[in-house]
Amino acid sequence: MPFQLYVDSLFTSPYALSAFVALTEKGLPFSVQTVDLGSGAQKRSPYADRALTARVPALVEGDFVLTESSAITEYLDESFPPPAYIALYPRDRRQRAQARQIQAWVRSDLVPVRTERDTETVFFRKPCAPLTERAQDAAARLVHVAERFVQGPQHLFGDWSIADTDLAIMLSRLVRNGDPVPARLRDYVDFQWQRPSVQAWLARHQPG
Image (cartoon, rainbow, N blue to C red; front, side, top):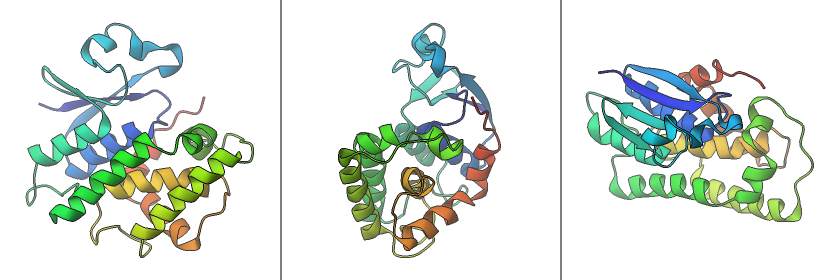
């Protein structure tokens, strides 16, 4: 049975993007349904009755509904494992733990960057003001951590993993807005943006 993936109607959610990329990389059949977050549709029936956290993305597989993007990507990787399907996480258990660490961190921290450089500034070039001091501090932490992991222009752990997409989209909040970022990280972001699964998401954008 094909999956259904519920995403925001503007296609700007980095978390919906992560789930979309995971399904696309796995080569799984799925359809995309949109939810108008601007009108609060995610908090009302019928969506909120199925997606209990009332957020996007939501993955629907028959009568099974799963929200929270990292839970979705882990579920897909366990349900459709290598070698028949591409791996979303590194094979090495420590690297796999680090990939999940990166996913958790970019979702739970760096709030000033996420607020002052929302993804509409990334995807639609929405104007934004210079970073505040709090956001500069958060940006410095983001760059510091990214530099520890990004050793070249391609992937964090040798082969591609879903953590590459998640980290690159977070870094793109700075890169696409001209904030200071080391050249190695800019090259990394540019490389990740060219991945076909990410390009497939970008092709769906609907500017507001």
